Length: 253
Length: 311
Image (cartoon, rainbow over all chains, first blue to last red; front, top):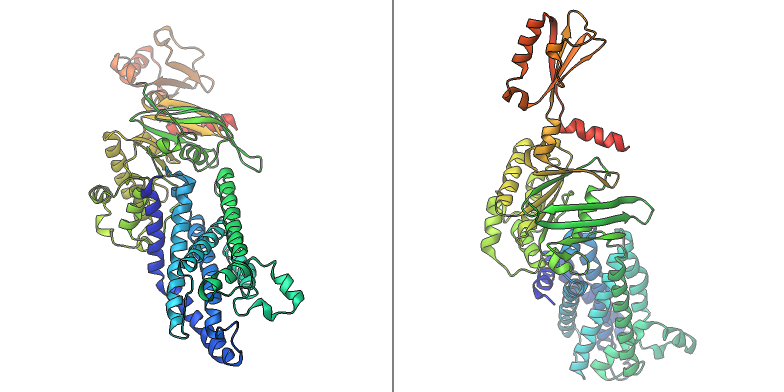
């Protein structure tokens, strides 16, 4: 692998984040703080502890996961969509670089941004609720794996999208609803049995559950199920990207 | 000179909708030359360049860049190429310096600020290095694209319609830049609509129409072919045949004998058989004329004829 092109793409993408600091970092932090105010303070005071964890603290992993998922998809999809839209993708396609290097550059940058954002939100939430992280290594593992996997998904969406509307379609209509319904703000034990079963079909449940376990040692599904689910996601995303580059789908006529 | 740097063999490209953009294209580009590819809109110029540069997958055939296959050895092949696209595409919010440095890194080269500085200065972009691309004029943006293409020190430079929409002064500046590159050993392939540009710059000229290469010729040879002139004399009295003293290949009668047409190039004058000799001969033969005009066919005429023939 030639590291110069990877570095060039990575640094250019990170520079874009610095240029759009308000949108990239400040905006997600503010919206997360609002979630804390509304769910944590206003509603949380009326909800008793869940498995021994205060409601405000309980929603922290879910909130980080919500931001991680939406921002990973959004960053990575925009990162590759914009050169397609502006036409400057010609330079990427004509450069002597492998597809792996392209993906590492773009996805690496998108995942890095999401991880930084996740850590900022973690720090921010510390101002609202007392935090404890029972398994910090697992917490970081989930953080990194989720950021990378959903950045890969975002990369796929960015290549697939042929307009700004499609770029927003999947995050708005798929990722956000699945995250809200994936136990970010509640334990699935709180649902009626029928809905508990339905909810288990939502892959985000496994991510939120595993991530929450790394904080408080409590989970809706087993750790093995969470890890398996995220690895499956990762494998599926990698397979789709490999296919995209092999066929030139929406990149090379 | 037979030192090919690009060899294109049996190249076909049919797009998904069934449109055949390239048909059995064979072409060799020699090291160090400026090759102009002419053709009307939609002839396949950009598709040909795009296949060579890796932007479009060929349906059939292959391309060798300095001996490396453009698909199986794409790294070695592509690192030798710089591409200046037709469209002014760039990252609007980036600065000139950053976008040119980015291109160098993208092509796998370690940072070299001295080289970037040299490129920017050669293209009169040095003063604009900290400007965002969105603040530049169209001509300046075009220069930035050239700077990006030169950032990784390519041995081959593709210029796709480099002076489209560029004013005359800037066009001449760009020609100077291109000549300077050629003097430094860079092989240049340019596509253009401007016959003047091909005449001014190219060592060899290729004409593409409907996806087929219809002509490849040394510019000098082509200009010799095309550079012939015609002198037409309108005679007072029509001739049925040429008198023996005027019986030569260059002369013919037209318009029912009312016109005497003399086709010539530089050689006749050198051999002492030029226009002045002809006029003396006509006077001696007692052939009077009331008017005359000359005409020179241009590269454009031949280009249009070639394209028409194939249509």
